[in-house]
Length: 240
Image (cartoon, rainbow, N blue to C red; front, side):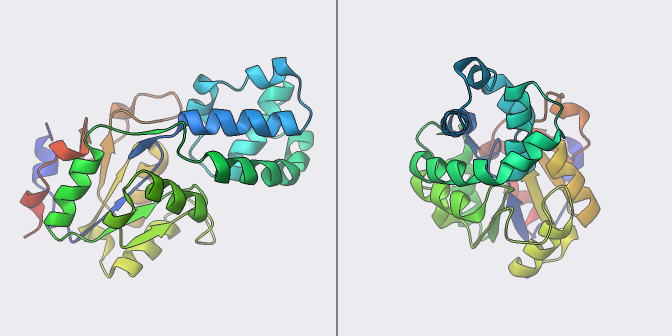
């Protein structure tokens, strides 16, 4: 159940919702696509096997370039910022893009309560935007394939603005697109990345308990609430 701090918030005039780890469990997609990408780059089987679900869960969330750089470094047994890994990112991106377009959503699942929670928000007339560090085209494609796209007025990916979360700029621009102020626009996410961006933008933040938070307990990240399901949040209390 939401805590008392959540009940004291509002009114909310719109919501911004993260994608990976918040609405859809996409770790399976990332693992399969990264394995294909590494194979295309000539990596050995032992190097590819290092990039497993546990590694991706700790790594995903800060944009594709960051994910590819850290994946290459991990597979090759190098430091995250090693020049060899940095230099290989453009070539890796070309392979990654093709595989992700083909496989996007085939190894992922919508979290329980997400479809129901989004339907509740739409029924209440709350404008919604999806804001993710995943490239916009991939985000649009995934939402369509999972039957979630119709809930959102806007979908903005990591390539939509000059900077990505945890920078506040994407949230500020998304509020502008929604026609709302940050103080009355709630962000729903799954990580400290989302919380940092929301805090800097002046948006209240609700965090789900089931996503990816770089290996750290999500309940240690300050938020107005930590919730187990989107459809368990009493949204109507803050729409006055």
